Amino acid sequence: MFENLMDRLESSFKLLKGQGKITEINISETMKDVRKALLDADVSFKVAKNFCDQVKQKAIGQDVIRSVRPGQQMVKIVHDELVALMGGEAVDINVKGQPAVVLVAGLNGSGKTTFCGKLALNLKEKKGRKVLVAACDTFRPAAIAQLQTLCSQIGVECYTEEGVKDPISIAQNAIARARREEYQVVIVDTAGRLAVDDELMDEISALHSTVKPTETLFVVDAMTGQDAVETARIFNERLDFDGVVLTKMDGDTRGGAALSIRAVVGKPIKYISAGEKMEALDIFYPSRIADRILGMGDVVSLVEKAQEQIDEEEARRLHKKIANDRFDLNDFYKQIQQIKKMGNIKDLASMIPGVGKAIKDVDLDNDSFKSVEAIIQSMTPYERENPTMINGNRRKRIAAGSGTSVVEVNRLLKQFEGTRKVMKQVSTGNIPGRMGMMKKKKRR
Image 1 (cartoon, rainbow, N blue to C red):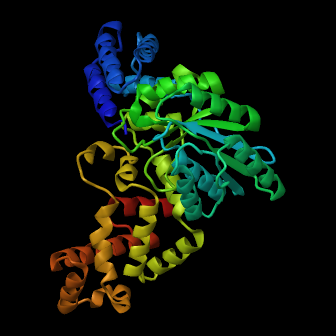
Image 2: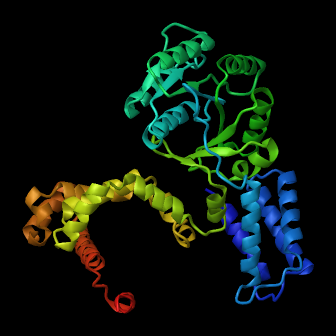
């Protein structure tokens, strides 16, 4: 996501390297490059031009702060304008009401039905709401079955009416059931089409007018770029929706939709979705997206994802095992599973400042753990608990059982031993080198 734009902007800022002051002369060429970068990212010409004009107006004549290079100061100005362009602050979903009704609209293929499942899980797990999902897409034959499968996976009730083709009737009955059975949120999945047409707009408008949702979300495929922005504009004229959801952010997307929608439609992006996993749904934070675009990473989101997967009781148990030097391969395996639950490994690594560019061309995904998992699974319970007892013969057997080589088994055991030593040092405060000296000084 945004990789090409990130590279182009970084190249543009290098034009200011060595300058003592940001002037109209040295900024013109920089902004020309920035505008080209935005257009290549599929940002609309008008939005790109207005953005560059705003940046130029704020940048011209600014004295370079002592110890801060002009390029760095320019990054700060561009960052602030990117945040403003995307809406400034994150906007939460409105789920107030008895029940709250969330209407989800979008074209076929945008990821609308999958998003309904992700949103249901998000509201259930993070907001503690009792959720009912109404299958009102009677146009696409597989939509109801797909929604039922997703709801079954996440433990959420799916309301359907077999043989009924009227989405308004289904939605009304679902809401009535929600009131009777004290569901707090009803998510209404609506029909889409392959393109915007009168029949689709009339149907969704009628449904919207009847159920009077507390929140209307429009789902768009981020990979469609400016087409997504134009479709959102047309839908908004009929629905006056409350927010946008960008899906497939892990695909080959240049980011134009994320940067343009707020400016063109005037409605906030509320969620971004990447991947097929039901947990892969994030609140849209303009400042964090701006950080990623400018290669600053996104440590806050990384920490939040980690906290979601870490059980406090398990963390205390693990800390105790590490302190007593009893951290074994069973614990190591559990940590791998927690990391995988956080999302795509490459996306997670790119949230660390400076790492995204370094691993851009590296083939890194969750499958990278497969050989490690296979090796550990090929061990006996005794071997996992006592890795130091794994001798040559055991290593050969483990390699044969996991479909790997003895070299790979040796590498894993060596890495594990190194990890265990570092974790023990951190746990006990016995950190070697400069960091350890600094810690000791603080204690005095």
